[in-house]
Amino acid sequence: MPDPRRPEIVFLKNIPIKIPSDLVLSRLKFAKYKTRADKKILSFIAGIIDEGYSLAEPKAVFAVFDISIRGGTVRFGSSKFAVKSASLSKHLKGASKAALFACTIGGELVDRVNAYVKKGEIASATVLDAVGSEAAEALADRIDYIVTKNARAEGFSTVTRFSPGYGDWTVFDQGKLLNALKASKIGIKATKSYIMVPEKSVTACIGLVKSGSKPVRKVYEGNISKAKK
Image (cartoon, rainbow, N blue to C red; front, side, top):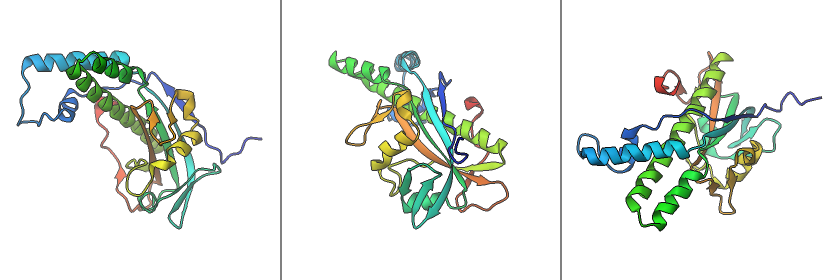
């Protein structure tokens, strides 16, 4: 008989994402209203963004766990995954559930960046790397939106996402988080130095607060842009 406390792990592929050109420019240190890029540069960046779309393979996995918080440790349901972090414990105060997710745009884009570097095409490599970073963030935002939408349907609001490396949540937990989600099925693994492969990958935790309760942290309501729907 299946364990009712064991969450369903949801795998997603071919997720539509939008890579905002203004955020790519910002990542490249073009300060809005201060640094102006000419038409040639903008055309070049637009071409690299299109290349990024062709190389990205957006995939994700998430699961919603019942959580318990005690003594600065957050335990995720019946899984063996637990996070010892005062920061995460405080962030999730008031939440009875939490979603863990991992997402990636795959490894082809980074391989192309490295190929550009080897050929000495540093401008293309720099811009494409920025495009990849923004694509990974756009994908994380998309999964955040999906989790939030599902939570609302169940009568919950969500707390802003929190990732390993924030506060005192150590990146040493990265491998355990990926194992809890069986993220190897979408190609994400952690190296012995706790770096995720593929490089353009994101993991996070999103707290779910029952509607009507009073969470300590501000809940994530109504600020998902229409472009992500």
